[in-house]
Length: 256
Length: 275
Image (cartoon, rainbow over all chains, first blue to last red; front, side, top):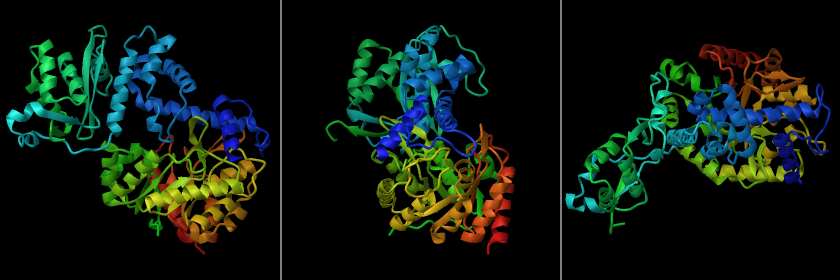
């Protein structure tokens, strides 16, 4: 059966064990173990390259040798699930949190979370961006009923570490100035003119965003946020989201 | 009726990221370009680049991830992403490989051979039909480079492809370097393979370089086309006729001018060797 042949071949590629008797063992200039090794190298090399493409900052932070150890272990624990290699690597943050040799680098998982958000933002579908004039169609007294829809590239992250500054410092041409122990931070990932951006958010802005992303109204989210943080500035938050092309559409509660 | 492949019958190059900017600025004299489909799934910068390329050239979408021979059901999300890309780009050709990539719970992101049995032929026939139906386009299916073979194959890869094309009206993307690799690795008779090709079904040629590991030729696309592969290409053109021909280079990618020279060589070869 074809399914048995493929399963057996896959097992040999993934584990390096000799394949079934149904595969020829001798070729013109080599034996089957060489063939399996070539496939096994391709398999691991392609996945390694995919991880290196998605996690360039992690690779810089830990260095080439450590990164190879890390990807080799990751590949052993996380088989690919998609024919599209750009989907590979989604579990890196959780993997790093449990990866014994990286326990001294507490910020690594959140840097990975941020890099994955950037990777998703890079490949996210296009969507028409909402502008201030779209909002002008709504009478001001109805603003409280707004439910916002965010761009597919838009992500917000919270971390106990300054992950946004770490990420910025490792971009090409950036000066590498950041304080690794400067404490908690929030980051807004967005895509403007096809370029992925990472901007710092205040914790209160991130809390408001989290509520909006749940689909509650602007009135409710703002009220809840102000109850805890009286200094929350809604206007500057909205301008920030407009600037970063983070919103695509809105509904009014009761008009869905 | 599926929309047939309509690539211009000239030589060209595979467009890869290191050359995006230069190609868009210098607009080399080519009629078409080929890209890997999966790199343009979604929107943003990759798609914008491809749409700018499309304003100047015909485009061929060459997929590496569909897994036509896998036993798992076709990945509908993958197929839909390809369909959306086709809608945006209006490609002159869409191609995939005669291989599998998924078994059990996982995917092996490579181009893997399988036994050429009647069971596999029925299976791949259904899947090529599904893909063509979804896209509304003729699919070109590429012969594979292989490092091993199955003792219970019931036909050759060439016979398999010819019958697949007869049943589904898919086109054949004939990779001459893959055939050369199989001739050297597995003892396939390359000239027999070419003589038996259904000429009208062949819609495109691929040429590339390989490397060697422990006696095994590996399809690495990291070298210029080998003289022996040029010779085989000449033979193919003399037997099958000229077809759109692509230079593939995917690793240790050289300057654009090196690729363009290779394409020019293929163009000359096509003109000289056509019987």
